[in-house]
Image 1 (cartoon, helix red, strand yellow):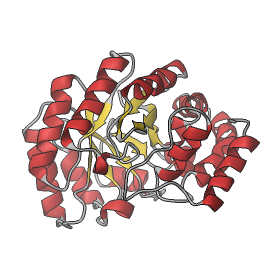
Image 2 (cartoon, helix red, strand yellow):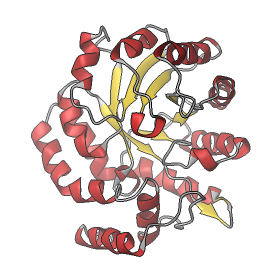
Image 3 (cartoon, one colour):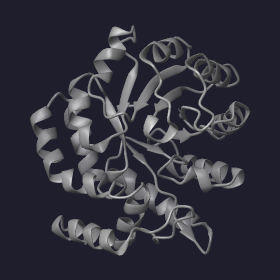
Length: 291
C-alpha cells in the first residue's frame, strides 16, 4: 500500500488559522497529478506548531477529501508516548490508512526506550505503522537492530528513512528485515539510488510543487525503469536542492506561494526565507517554468 510517491503535505494558513479550503485544493491537485499517497500533519505540514485540535482536524480533512482514492499516511508522532498513542488512535478512528511515527525527539531515549515507545503505540492501536527515522531532527538514529526488532511487531509495515545513508536499505535487510517491509526514502535528492538498493518510494517535499513528475519518477522505479527515473531526477535536482536552502518547510511554502498554490504564511519559530534565498527560489522556479 505504501509505495511510490507520497507527498508530505504543507499546511496552508490564512489569518492565523488552517486554510481548509486551500488545503482541500492542494489535495485534489495531488490526486489529479498521480500522487500515490498523502502524508498530512507531518514535519512539512508544521505539525510542531499545530495544536492538538488542528493536528487532528488536518488529518481528518485529508482523509475526508481523499475519500479513499489514495492512501493517507497520517503523521502521529510525539516525544510523549501517551500523546503519540492519542494522536494515532484519532488517525485510526477517522480512517487514515496508516500512521507515520517519528523517533522521540529531545528526550533522547535509549534504543530500548525507542523500542518500547513503538511497542506501546502498536499495542494501543490497530492501524499500520511506518517508522520515521530522522536523526537530523530527532538527534537519535534508530539502530538497524532496533528497527528489525520493531519490525517484528505485527502492524509495523515499513520505514521512512531520512538519513540519506545509501547503505541503509541493504543493512536493514542484513539485520533481518523481510523483503515485504516497505522502505521509503525521506530524502528527495537520493530517491533513485535508494530505490535501486531496495526502496519502494519516497515521502517527498518536492512533490508539493511538481506532483506529476515525482509520481512519474517513482512509477518508473517501481517498473524497474531506472534510466527514465534518473532522467526525471536530473531535471528535478535544482528544485530538490533549493527546497532545503533553509529549514523545511520554509522554502517549499514560499515556492508554493509563488506558484499561487497557497499563502507563504508560516508559524513561528519558522519564518519566511531570507531575501537572498527568496531570490534563489524564484530563479529556480523560473528556470523550470513553474512560474
